[in-house]
Picture: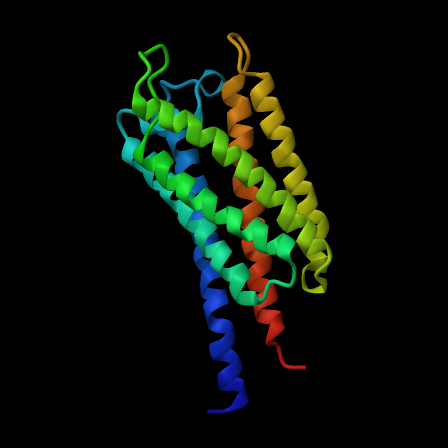
Length: 217
């Protein structure tokens, strides 16, 4: 086996992880976009994205949750494989694992129908939503801070910071609009968009870093 063959085998896993993560996040975003066409009965301004998991086509939204979780898992594995150089990034990557589990919970336990009696399934979904927001916010901040000190991620640092900041702003807006008459549904879609944007951008950068790490000098 030549040195070039060895390098190719060494970089193959993280390239696969990054590629699968990109596909998962793109699929999740595409499904949510499609649900806006299939479920015209749910006005975006006054309904959460999670409501697409209820009723007809609910299985599609469930698959979107699963894709988000699997994408986070692939991103976690890719970051570990590429070589994490600080405990900050290690902790942030670990929190992606929490998000993976949270996405599985979201797929299994849908929210309650609006104005319907509270159920155990709905309470689990709501609690999972709060845990997911907290863990993912912390993951973004820690990983972005870790990227700032890693020269391999220099070109992506400002983008990562901007996307992480947008996610935090979206979360704040979500909680500020959780009142009757407020466009909480639009805020929720902003949360979803920024939730997808950061890991998708990071997975794309991971693919670039993986290729460049073993590029011929």
